[in-house]
Image (cartoon, rainbow, N blue to C red):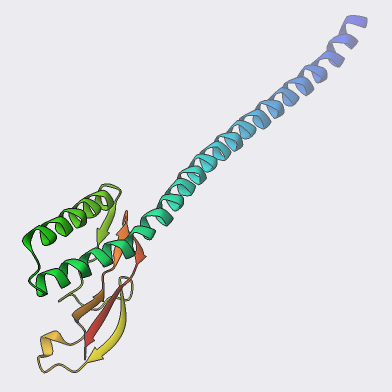
Length: 160
């Protein structure tokens, strides 16, 4: 009779222990999943931080790029010496190459349909041709993207 009583008491204990073990396993699996999500989020944040730091540096080069393009245009219009034009072209090409290697791309705007996601209208001019309405007629400042995200909108003149 004593054995029977012990057996009845041990069965609920075993069942309780198994339930507690399952609960502990579940908590462990959830904790591991939460830690894995935390680790992934931190890695993603680190990459975004690196990208944003690089973005600031690359964005700082854009005015230099603009100045090089303006200098080259002035040299060509003033019929400067070939060496000066060639030197400025070399600098501009190196800077363009440097930026493109890091994912900076120029936004092609002239002739494109005006798109507020890429362009900023600084002026509107009337056009006779219906095909040129709501299209970019001229670019006053080049726009750029970094890995598909706009870092500077193209400032454009739009036909109306």
